[in-house]
Image (cartoon, rainbow, N blue to C red; front, top):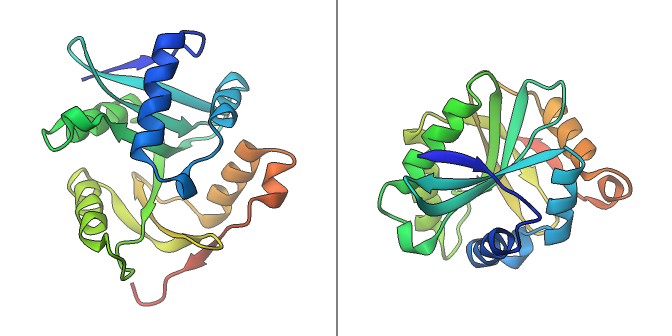
Length: 187
């Protein structure tokens, strides 16, 4: 599996990623697409195409701020044609290898909640556990959503994570981004 930096100016590449982004993530979990691209241009984020040999299989978008030793996998998606065939595991291993000198955090829909898609959430959580991620003792709470947090490598403090998201969002979004981290008791 190879990571290839996304060229935002490449219209074909950008359309392919845009389509995957809208297919793979529900509306309530998506930022406005142009904000994602702007943050890459501002060097607050990176995005990579995921290739298996010469076949494009997916995309990852992560927050990576200068002079920080941690990153946040914000969006990670494998194209529908390649899901359930091991490409996600291979891609995640390539990402982890590329960022082996970083602490890594990600959020995923909380599998402990009773929802119609609970089985899918549990499966996703188990996928990350199998790849070496560990649960963090806090959840990201938004007005209508909550996300479990996981890490790879050394732990990330809630204050570090909050600072990263605020810096990524920038003014004025960090002031209207209504979320916080809540400690999970008895995990």
